[in-house]
Amino acid sequence: MDFRTRVQIDKSEVRIDHTTKMMLFGSCFSENIGNKLKEHKFKVDSNPFGIQYNPVSISNSIKRLIVDKQFHKSELVYNNEMYHSFMHHGSSSHVDEQLCLKSINDRYSYAANSLKDTTILLITFGTAYIFKLHNSQQIVNNCHKFSANNFQRSRLSIDAIVEDWCNLISMLVNQNSGIRFIFTVSPIRHFRDGAHDNQISKSILHIAIENIKNKYRDRIEYFPSYEIMIDELRDYRFYNEDMVHPTSVAQDYIWQCFSHCFFSDDTQMINREWTSIKRSLDHRPINAETQAYSKFLLNTFKNIETFAKKYPIIKCEEEIKQLFSLIEKSK
Image (cartoon, rainbow, N blue to C red):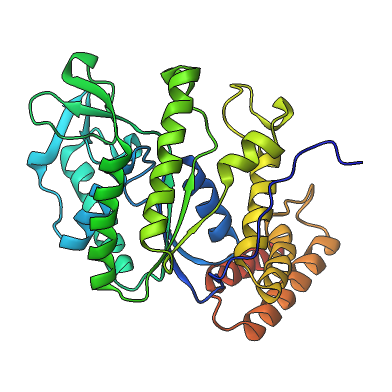
């Protein structure tokens, strides 16, 4: 007897393997899946502007990458002894103006180049609510703890999201005719909006994605991360102490669902092989001076060399260098 309602997820026609070039934009789900993809050696560029929540901020970031226009110091703002960009998450902020700008532009250049030959964009919408600066009407990605008096809070309409994203998709297709999209709605509830407003917000995002998908059926897939978390994993044991963010167990389960949906059996087998090697690489012994540990390192080195020869498309140079250093230290 099954004591939960399972979300039916069919195999997608979109196939992701270790040759696929991906970019991820959006809220924490993009961050979590991006980290999982990186851990399993996929080619992925995740959240170059940091975590983003609303569809317009995500869209504006991608448009900025398309036009290939780096940031100027005039676009930085100062608050609480730090420099910030209203287009970036707080992780890009810095106490030094020049270092802040350099960090933003270095990351920007890398992402702009990545976008040119990306084959799949994974987009996570978190909320339909936006904050707009009173003086410039700019929709900000992050308020950076400026006074609330500087912003006007409002909710995006379905039509506004659909129009904006259809324009963006047309721009991206003109630049890269083979690009495909995976959309999802973040499973993290924005309870600061209130329980009712959160439900309205998530509903707007769902309907907007469905309408966009109907216009680009041959290019867009939807992945039900929100539905998995809210329905299959509805028990609070799958939530962290804040009762909002998913636990690592929940993240792993959603990753399994994602893998089943978009990975072939061969790709999933490669992931299992690499996970075994990664577990060995992450192992920290009680005593690193024993012969047993030296033997363990040599066996791991042989395994990773075999893996690298078997799958030459997957780059393992950093891990081999790391392991070689550990072997030298153990002698």
